Length: 192
Image (cartoon, rainbow, N blue to C red; front, side, top):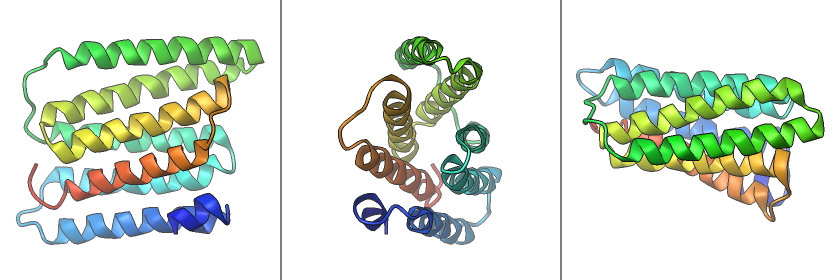
């Protein structure tokens, strides 16, 4: 369905079906867990906000951004419920990346006259950077890869939308996005 949406038919239903299947996969993993932990439920709620964001972003960009922001906040709370390793040097890399993206996006938005988007984009960038960092601290390969893929997907989307066109952007955005959520859902298969 994802390939069909990306290459042949851009109707929203074909965009949502892969996420719905990923959510079902996550729910299957959660139902098989005994005992169920709070992070299981928080992750599923995060996935639900992502599918809501998928729908809303095609209608009103800021509404979709808010839905994804809430989804990332649920992911952060989910990841924080799991064992957290001590901070390491990766936090500086994530912080530097976030600051660079905030600066580039802010300048691009100001130059386009989209001042109303500057603060939401800064907040969103800070939250997704925190999500990546929190995932990193779990030391779960599923969550680390998933969160980094989410960061890549959102970075490509933001660059393509606000800075300059990227060839095959929809393919890059959607494949990394679906993969990100797949990895996050799969982290529910076993205690991370």
